[in-house]
Image (cartoon, rainbow, N blue to C red; front, side, top):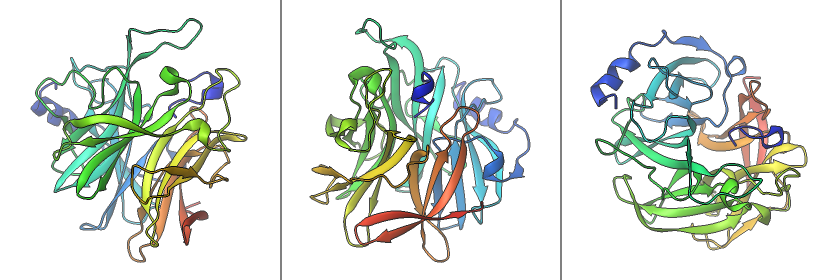
Length: 336
């Protein structure tokens, strides 16, 4: 969720981009409680024993355009950054903003899955409704988790996902050796938001086949319909295979106490589902867009999300996660 719903919503060339990345302010040592962060992601690099956090919240690059920044840590408490790893190039198809970057390693390359926003209207508009605009999830690639990241192709002019769909919050899931993007179809376009998936090519540069719906936001008992728009939001899918072999999916929406995170379970153990919503959320205190990773040393499952979901006050918080059979429970907060 990019702005709180209840408050109303909210290459150069490749070489030039590289030069820009080196011109920013020197990275500093920070703590997460002191930095505005939302919709962020941690990639735990086992090879270097380094945690990499990426975010785009209110960030601008040296060229003054929306950017993704990167922090590193060895202990999940002290972080060094920010450093710009991607800035929207001049002439790029989307110039308004970047949402929810995710960092993934796949077959020796590093990928940013992120959402680009525009003011460009789509053909179909509804009276007395929010503007439907080009907004889409796209995959960028780099040789290092520290970037610089670049789009596929010399002059990309559209999102990786179908450009007639308002999509966001794409994430990577590999099943039976095949990469897929799991993403949200924006409620602004369809009212009852969905989580969907589509196969990706082996280099993650394009889609293969058509997207398929997994579930709607209204499927969860803890998802609260917006009083203003009568909609159900879907945000931030993240998949996790439990030690017992169950496939779970974290996702976020509006709940009784604000932004809320719960999870669904695939009854088949496969991405195609069917998906069954757990009856109670795991975090209901106005926080969400969660993802998980493993802590170095003890392999403990960790979760990061942002809370509160209030513009200018968002902070990233990290919790230990207790995996109890096929269930997840939020445990101790780290670095509080």
